Amino acid sequence: MFDMLRKIWQVGTVTEKQPFEPAPKKYRGKIELTAQKNTNWEECIAACPTGALCMNVNKIRLFYGNCIQCGNCVKICNTDALTQTTDCYQAVNAKKDLFISVDKDEEK
Ligand code: SF4
Image (cartoon, rainbow, N blue to C red; front, side, top):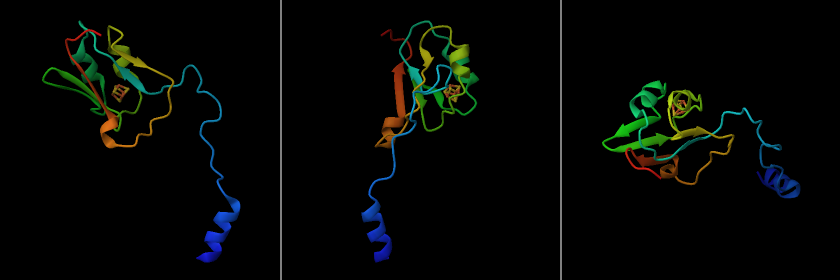
């Protein structure tokens, strides 16, 4: 045990932030959700294979924990309410940060 701890202390930090280069332009990264009027939310939600996107009364919710970044919702969406970024960093400190929600009929 002490040998292992001594070795860790001698080596120090060996991890580096990933990835080393920016993601390619076509990389399917994190989905962004913004409030938009006249969005076909029902069709966007129906296109989601994992249930990450859902409607709760007048709120549209996206749970990143279930999102596989397939982009189906973005393809179906007829506004810019859903966009796919090249952001590959999804780590959060608290589970509540994996949820985002917007008002269904609100315009930002
Ligand atoms: S990218 Fe795919 S999994 Fe994620 S919310 Fe959109 S349809 Fe659902």
